[in-house]
Image (cartoon, rainbow, N blue to C red; front, side):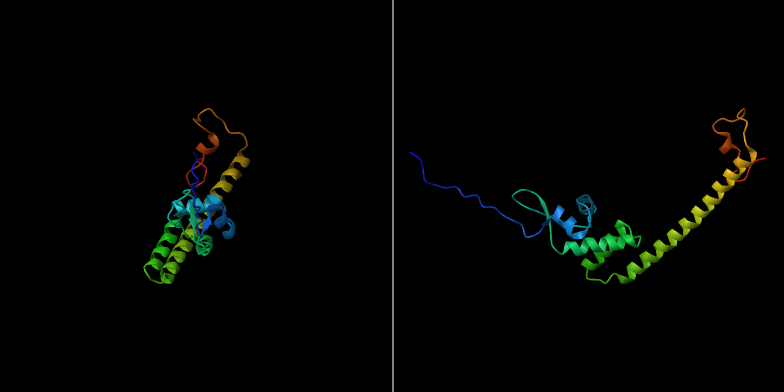
Length: 156
């Protein structure tokens, strides 16, 4: 004898965006969304039926903010600090301005260092072109480099 009992399986759909959906809406890749989740910039909920991650529709704006902040040179830790301030009810604009100014100073220093390196490289190449063949008798590694002083001048 068979029973007429029917087992109903209730399906639950979450009112959020899955990783791929959030990525598409935000203009980034799913890998980027997962990275932001791992670093704590995004907080996913879990669907109890399938353990998939899902995000709030407001996370689209959050991802766009993250991208804009990164375009200004801010790092993940900086962006987390901004979000922490907002979550504590504070306006982070003063903090943001300080962070961006510090980033500008760091980039300016990097540019200066790169210009110095460029000059050293150009001087080394000129030296190599002017001297032609270099004897390798006393060289341990590469005489082209070994003949240069740290600041790029030759030892003569």
